[in-house]
Image 1 (tube, rainbow, N blue to C red):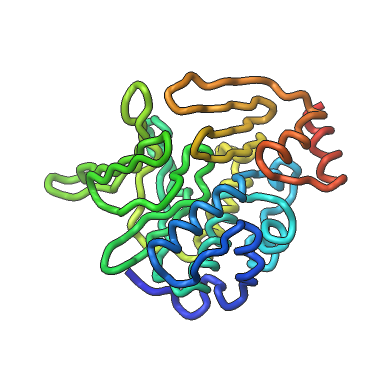
Image 2 (spheres, rainbow, N blue to C red; image 1 turned 30 degrees about the vertical axis):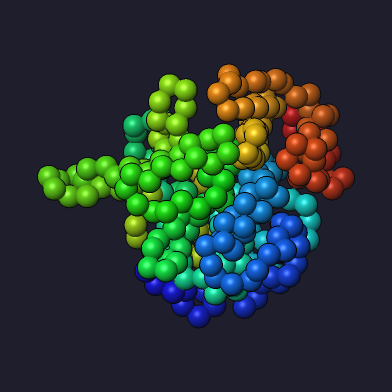
Amino acid sequence: MGRSIGSVWGGDRLDLDAYLKRIGYDGEHEPTLKVLRGLHAAHIATLAFENLEVVLGRPVRLDLESLQAKMVRRRRGGTCCEQTLLYAAALDALGFTFTATASRVRLGEERVRPATHMSLRVELGGEDWFTDVGFGAEGILEPLRLRDGEIARQAGWTYGLVREAGPTPGAAGPLVLRRLRRDGWFDLYAIGTEPRFPVDLTVTSHYTSTHSLSPFHDKLLVQRPGADQRLALDNTELVRLVPDRTAERRRIPARELPGLLDEEFGVALDAEDTAALIARYE
């Protein structure tokens, strides 16, 4: 586990007070598990996953100043890479020791996908903790101890980690993050082990926002996890998931989308973005 090299994650350039105020965190500022839990919970409660820049035909800018302008000074969320880079800058500023990881998303499928989901592995007291603020509606609500067999009940949701067998006899495979559903365990993603850096997130973001095979390329995706419910907007279909209940689905008229984004996801659009979004879905 390597400590971030210099200011590679931008902690020295982050307006930490503004970030903490934006997510509503007013606790301690020490690199402890208590603080990590508090930051994780506050971040996901405030900053929704959203790919509006992609849908509206704009570039996804990953420099720290652009991230702060969008997600801290404006009421916007961001993609996985945007969220992870902003969150990593905050952990860096607070003195945490961590590395980024790239995971292969499964969402219940067996096919091998590219390693495009980014999250963080944090070292605390000789143990590794896994924290992920950018996975959207299916995401964990607080950090998990990164070890085989770990099971954690988080509000009404249960998560687990299991190590798979490697490609050759006797070899260890990846740890897989799963969520327990009514019909059994559901694989979310296989966690990578090779350390990643901001430049890797730049490459990943370019692929996920521009490649025709990316699920984020040609449709609106806005998601938010929560203790009582999980929300996902897929183009104009809103899905509301409550523990141990069947998902509720409804279509949202184009002109109601901006208001829905504000009220349900905490994403506020200016007049230009509002007009562009309505025009796209009308």
